[in-house]
Image 1: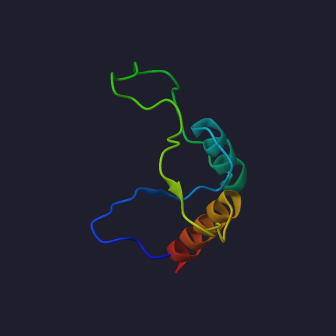
Image 2: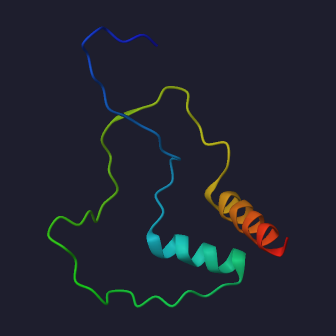
Length: 86
């Protein structure tokens, strides 16, 4: 894909799945066996807090994630655990 000179576009990459922070933390706990202490709602939202996923940008043509979120968390955890054991 070729862009014209002087033209600026905003692109986005998305997995196609909307996942909440609570869902990510739940997945992390299930995969790692860890239980971070989180006090949900302990602090009030700030004025400019983003509460909805950003939907702007042009989807990057033909882009697809090679690793899903669950697999990525598992790989990251396994890598970290292996690195700290050596």
